[in-house]
Image (tube, rainbow, N blue to C red):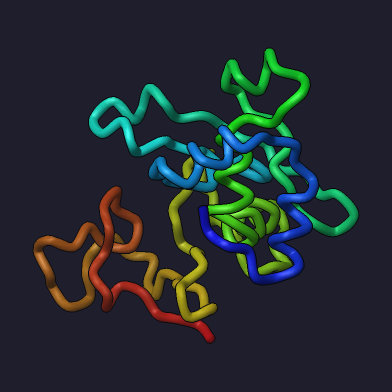
Length: 170
């Protein structure tokens, strides 16, 4: 299990109730995280290899006095065991940590820098958070690539457009 250096990581873990067995399993197993919606993170146990989709659960995140904490999981262990939190919540708190939790919390907060453009109920992906802190925005509303790239689906296509179809706002 990763050591927690910051006080916010320690505070998140203090909000959970789990035993040594759960802590060991979280340390031994491989987890993947994806933000599925506002205050929702999909936690997948990748240790199961090609069967990992059968071991994937949504974990709800709630704000407890300014700290985002895994609150509920759809797995059986969390639903039926009132005494302890499940390994998916513990993994999200320790392995995913404050970065993943903050991303889930910021998804419904446009002021935080994350926003999605939605047209007819479909996310176009026009605005996404970049690793450098900026957002990638579509440079042109046309369906064709400005540099004539045949593989580019264009800014409004279903695939990933080429680099020239995006401009990065700092």
